[in-house]
Length: 320
Length: 320
Image (cartoon, rainbow over all chains, first blue to last red; front, side):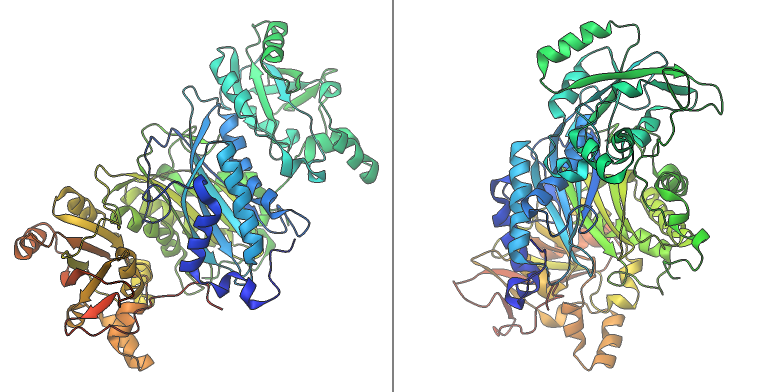
């Protein structure tokens, strides 16, 4: 479905901002609380604490969705991307505000489906949509959503230690074949991990294991990656058939996996940890390596034979 | 200064996202606290409560600034617009996250000045910049900033009552001649108003008195506007000379005034209120009318002779 309307009557410019905001309010329904907590004042007035987590993520036409995307899925994805960040901190979501950049020709029918998809996702994950703003633009539609959440003991990236076991949820690669619109944010898993004293560090995979693993590896910290254990999705294998590249490459570099990559205290019993996980979740879990101390200038990621793992770049933004 | 670089080496695409984020961190300096509160994890981990206010506002090249705009002023404006919303609630700002939509050709020098202007403004108004995201775009640069704040007793729009006195700060109109980049958000005034029991309702003027006054006037509520008392800026008069329209028209419809429009209990003594204001602030204050009960379908705004005030539309967004 195209985000743009063929006739003037069917586009957002036919309404103007005030009437459009009223429509958006009705499309969001009870996913938006009544004013002054929901839309209707200069700021949302929150009825409970906003929480100790704060993040933002965006969604832009042609970059994150296109004419083949169900607009309801695109609306849900805007929130899901942010929920995946909350999940990686071991938190629960609370409040969100959305900025919309809308070309005047944006279709009202498209925007309604987008908003209803966003609202359905917000209800499902108990996130209150409390406000935002609209800017007329030439490109787009584009959206930015800022989210708050609460984590009693936030899971950080910087707390990874040499000797930690490295785990990943789900399977990786080929996300553009569908997963990027249908993924389930690992909120329950993140909260469970945050409650366990043996969990050390966590990140969500948005740009691919190849890039995001490096975010856990501060100076002096490296990883031994059991490349054969990296869980590859069927979509990664299909992508490999088309591209001629190894499916491992797709698993590391496609991005938009929205899985958790986390580490567990290396002195804990990994078998006991994995039993506890399987008792709690059906979500697949793979132990894919260990962290290690690394000398200055050494390769950050080695395979189990001690060779540097090549082609771990992940999705690279803003490259000419 | 153009937001775009002439040479490849001087644009954001020359760095890529990871190095660019490092640069942005250095430009923001101590306006961004160290990780995990500042940039560096999946979410910012806030060290104090985020507060009970939450809002977002945006800034887009050619719409809110152009090649003639000092990028430092544009960066400050992104935050100032949001601070004006916090001011209208009688709150103090706490935390902000920024989404950036950047064309690959965005100039690094331009973006550095933008970020340094934003950071200077954040330091001035004690707002911690704690994160955000970057999206590659074709249009822009465009930015959305989400802000949290705290107000013990938030000033709402919906609490205006018939009989309330109507006040406005500063002077109105002609903002594009400079005020839209140099305005001072009325944070101290908003907090002072929120502390007084006789303050009833408040809004900040972003689309012009003509439109924003209506946001105070729910069903059954109207206003008598003393049109001669509406404070017009010198810039409104200059704009009138050029446009041939009355300066009152510019005062009501230009928008981007970022002044406070508020109401005071009609049973209070307005002279005493105004003395207290002058004792606290040098900021100009004008009593410009009263609120009144309004019959169904009646004109929302009358002048002191009882005639409907015409041409009160304000700036209209998203009109074809």
